[in-house]
Length: 209
Ligand SMILES: [Zn+2]
Image (cartoon, rainbow, N blue to C red; front, side):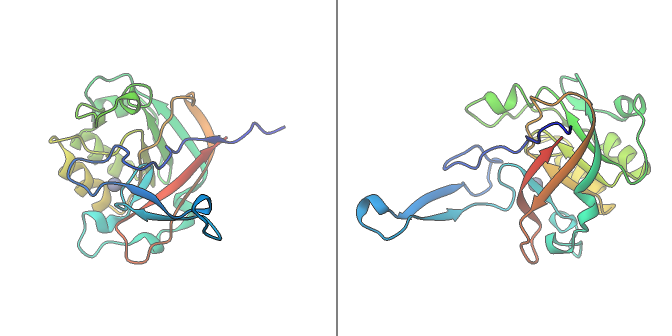
């Protein structure tokens, strides 16, 4: 019997943590049945890069692909979860110790899953992908990379470079996962970002089993 699906997305909440400088996430009930309305209705206002979300190449490539152009193969199928115990950034040397394959979908679990998501403020010191590691992922022709905090690149370190390298190579990126309950290994992945036309990113629900 198959194991149950595990949800590795973070809940979207009014006022939730977001990348510094990006628009805030507002989730407000505008029609309330308790106030006599015939139905409840919620209004959303948020950046395309809120919570668990994907980056399309267009995020850092002026004429890059946008969300509705994403092939479903990038986000549905077998994936591998790797765990890293680095304190700062995942480096090319860290990645050379694991076996990566062309066309692979990989998710990287770090202390972000248990530590950073538990903080009340944005964690400026989250574990990110250093630019030499980004370059190595491109050389290995990995198709999809998922990380367990709000960006593949760090805060004020490698943020731009790592995005330019990975998105510039047409890689599909999932950010904002919470892999706290997931052990390293092989899984079935389903990640479905909203089909927002022309968008550089989109919130998504991600499940593994
Ligand atoms: Zn993003």
